[in-house]
Image (cartoon, rainbow, N blue to C red):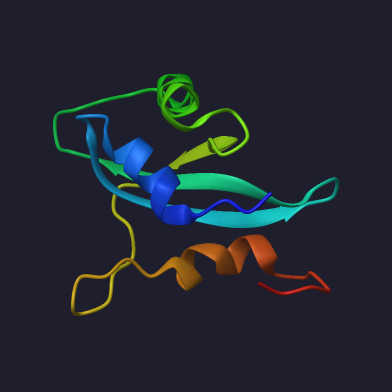
Length: 100
C-alpha cells in the first residue's frame, strides 16, 4: 500500500494536543516499511500513544494509521521552520543495506 505522509499527519494533527507532527517510514522486516508518527505536544497538553493511534484509525483506517507514535520535546526544523524528516529517519535506517 502507498501511504501518503500528509494524509496521516492531517489525521494526527486533528488532536488538540499536537503541536508538531512528522510521519515517516521505518524499516520493517515483514512489510518493508512501517508508518510511524513523530510528534511534539503543545505545552501543558498530554495525549497517549494509544489515543492517537485509535483516533487516526477512525479517521483514515488501520492500514494507513501509524503503527507507533514517538514523542519528542521538539522536532528538528530548518531555519525556515520546516520539519526535517530526513533527520528523523536517519537513526532508524542506520546499518541497513537499503536506505530511504
